[in-house]
Length: 260
Image (cartoon, rainbow, N blue to C red):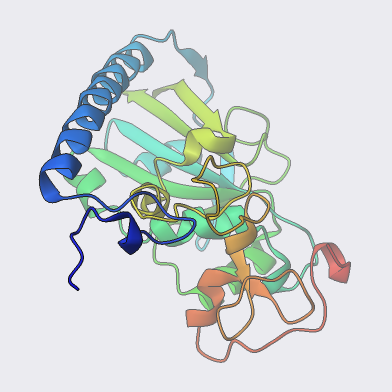
């Protein structure tokens, strides 16, 4: 005997109810009201960011890149706006021991063509020694500008793990905005896509239907083994690194070879 789409016998254990299209559309329309409100609030927050006061600082302070020491002003590349991501760094650590979260962010920012088209330059800053940073950038295949800000004071240097915006007015430079932790999720578009999938991000803090697959701790997906299985064991490395030629399982992890 055939079953109807909304027949309870067709329901899947540990899953949302199975309904007909009209019922789904009604529920979707109800959610859309909240999504639109969320979008409008995001617009209002963006407007508030643009109205934050600014902090002026010395734009001639030097940072180190592939051409040696250059003034911070050079990072604007002649544009008026600059966004940087401050990539955390562990001195002496192997490539697989560098920050999982920062690696994720950097992998999502491989091309700034759309920013450049709007008059915005982009660069990565990190506190690592330039020789270590250069080797890491080459291994990862990054094409965006990278600079060492070792021993450089804020707002150009510390703190790391921040997405920070600057404005230039001639030779004057200003800090306009900075965010860290989940505030940098806007950079990593994969999170927004995962938030629209049935299982979400798969992290333990997420609310989910009863019976849904159990999540792991935050950031679990940022490391995996060669087969793509999430792990923090001795054969793991940040997920984007597996796309690098010659990437192999590892024996040591973390800062200077210490295990996490």
